[in-house]
Image 1 (cartoon, one colour):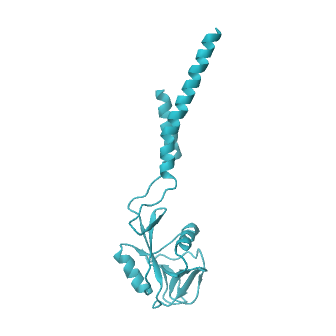
Image 2 (cartoon, rainbow, N blue to C red):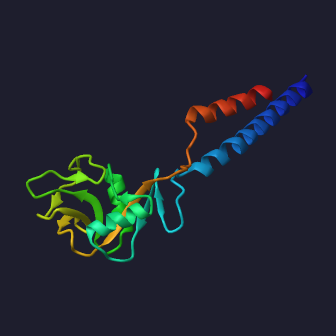
Image 3 (cartoon, helix red, strand yellow):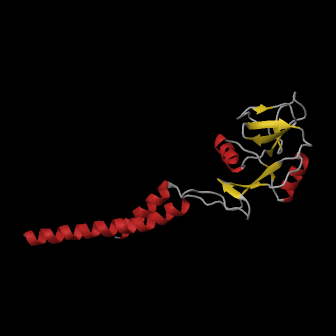
Length: 178
């Protein structure tokens, strides 16, 4: 009798080891491949979330920086979260960079280059018509001033992490076949 119980215990231990080994093999590549999930971008561009960013090395005025971005099938950078803004500040280095905010005069509201209004996520300092990213945050200046610039565009392909439920269902399907 004791021999049968040992064999049953060994069978369950073996099943447990095999099941967890298969689960690890199936789940690990999915989670490792997708952590973190960022855009795949063209050469010399940096991906963050679903966007690609280009940080220029040369200095031009605001109007030509927007034209340069359009030539790259992009636009002067737009951001919609503090997380994205902080990413841009970390990547820009010590130089100021033009961004896609502009206004007609200090009495007018800030607008993005896609004609959507700015939500004042971070206050813009200064009395200029065009905004740039500085070490202090967002400042404004005259459009004829030469600065570096940042372009942004959505990635054509973004690595997507599978939903947790998808991973769980894959593991559940494997356990049905064991």
